Amino acid sequence: TMGEFYLHHFNESDLLVFLSHELGHLLDVKNIYKSDKNNFIRLKILKWFYVLTIILLTTYINKYNFNNTVNMLIFIIFNIGLSCFIKLLNALKLAYESRKQEYAADKYAVQIMGDLMIVLDAFNKLSFVMQDVDKRSLLSSHPSLKQRIFRLKIRYWYLIFWNKIFSH
Image (cartoon, rainbow, N blue to C red; front, side, top):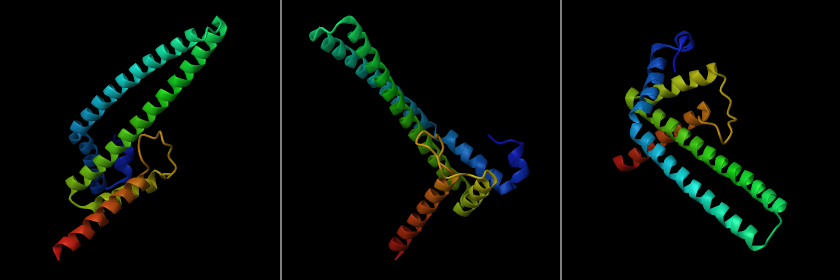
């Protein structure tokens, strides 16, 4: 994940932040396993939904005695549409899970480094160097650095707010 590019553009503190983020992915193995298990279960459910839909469609076609060409056309069009829909749902879910894992790794980076400002500084530098754009699609596996920075700041201010309330 870290190559020569990083060594030339970032200082030791920044590199530690990036390494701690990657370590966060390794420490989050339990959630990754749970995510993979949920994906497996979801794919099984989608498979059975798909099979049930084909059975119902076949029954519908047989009940109304369409001719063979129409049967085949309806069957093909429906299968293509259903297949695309299922693949889109799966891609959206996988992108969501991946982004969630990125946010979790960012949280681990803050915990490992012990200072949110160091992490924010490193992410801001990375965003500048990489010319991070804020426009990502729903299918992006990573949120933009700007989104990640914003989320860390919100978490930080939330913690300060609650600490002030409960410290009085």
